[in-house]
Length: 114
Length: 112
Image (cartoon, each protein chain N blue to C red):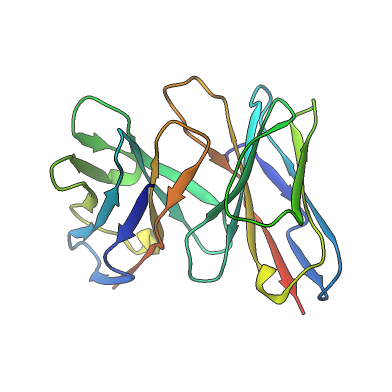
């Protein structure tokens, strides 16, 4: 167990809709990263939040946005869903020491866009 | 820019045989290297990591990996696999910044 939880486990949406995925990190882990894992692929970095501010972003459009809250929970929001957004979405929390960047992953939310 | 190449998409192996999963990376700066395992319908679990020091790194479940800077490789090995090792394995590289780059994964099938 990594101490990172995600909800919901599965989600089905239709094209054009909006979705919010949630993640709860370990206490003290003030950095959270979100990844998209398409079927048969490795995780792709979406963005990272540190102390409630976006700290870096991968090659994803602005319709992917996030929030991080003081209670170590966070959200990934995706607007105007497209079929290609179907994937497993993983969050990972880190307690950044500047040396050891070990990430603790949640079990993921599987999003299906029809 | 960093990149990670996992040279085998699938590796079938018989139980109790040795296995090597290959990983090469590309980076112009020093990197941290990781291997993660993903069991069906689960998130990623860290197997081992190389930050600095000894190039031979030992991880959980009997796995080990060797960092080879000249060949830019970080291959994962286990001397004797079990059925329970069947899973997807991901090699990843991190430069200490905010972004981790993952390879496409290698599916390990352990056959009885």
